Length: 89
Length: 455
Image 1 (cartoon, rainbow over the protein chains, first blue to last red):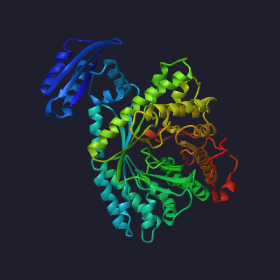
Image 2: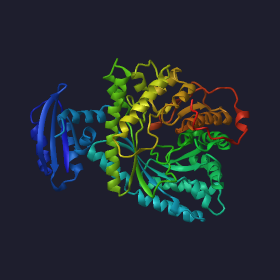
Image 3: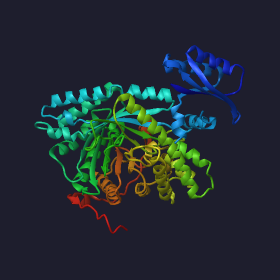
Image 4: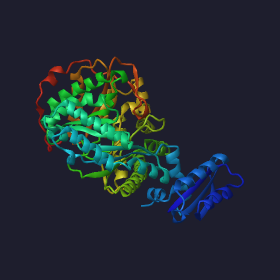
């Protein structure tokens, strides 16, 4: 199952390190990664794959929510289809 | 990979602009539960609902979590209960209320927040069961928490059953009086329709119609906030541009609904019915249909021009949404429930928005006079006359119209009634003080209108 991880907030050290560590610990593979500054906000977008769906989706969202809270960032994990269905015909 | 700007746009719609799926509604046919013995019927109804809908709330929550899109309500609609009452041995109001209580219990067991279908379709005439069910509505609504009721009193093909219109005015009054301690809350769960649709997922008017199957998933989308924000970027542009902007936004909103409907249908193993393309406001700031109309350039919702603005909005939402979903149905249009819309509440409090203007607005948008609090001493015949006016608009224009008014006991013009939650805050709006009693007392039927020579 593919999902998109979006990290929005103030740029700071260790964002990629922390987020990718959590993903690694939950057996989530990173397929693509891009980062940009949008309206003065650091925005990192990762396309990830839940390998064999080994770990429940909720565990990953909970771990990333906690990380987001600690770093003052907004982190979303959403299945890829929500974006493809909204923006592609 | 999808463009980052598109990803951020979606997230902004959900986080900042109140984009949500308003409801996943499971339609359950109760035809197989009909029988003579009330205890057996109640037992069958309870078992059927709690079996088919046992995973509904869980599946809704899973989809919410995985797609990151809020799904505000999970609900159930059932076959009009009058059908069951008709089949009972020695049917009575008490027995009908027993079915209502069974529905309430089943809804609580599966964890949904409303169950609709305590209904009767009497647009031409009553059966015995329908007459009994309608008489039992005040008791049924006062003695349950989650049951919603609707009665269809007219249609373009049948005309308007004025006996039912007269009776519904009295039923609305009784329902209000029976729940005087909650300011007539039962009336918020009671809708009187003309041209009721069979696949509506929205409450209080949802029921599973005669032409529907055993079980179905219907989804209602929302998103007035998203449309309002999109229009902020269109300041000063002409109406062609405004309509295009609304269409594009409606398309995106509806795609969400389609995705959720398909996913819920797959996970529950229940066929997907329709997506209802309605703009349903909530009392949350920024989630208002009135604010969209004001964004188009009206100082206050209710000003001259409001009907034209709403006509454009309603049409553009449908045009944008139709291509985004395989099957569109339900009510599909902009809702204007006064107490549930921050902009309408404010306009009604200031006197900018009156019942007369709302009535005009219902000619060009979805549904009708919705969630309007009127003085508690309004006579039943005046409520019937309000229903008759709305039904006439629906009948002549071949569209659904409805009335959900709350004659709040003891309240008068200028008072404000708090319902809380999604039902919001209702300023008591004045009604005409001239009597319609003689008109309503005539009874009989208003014949179906001519469908040609249209002017």
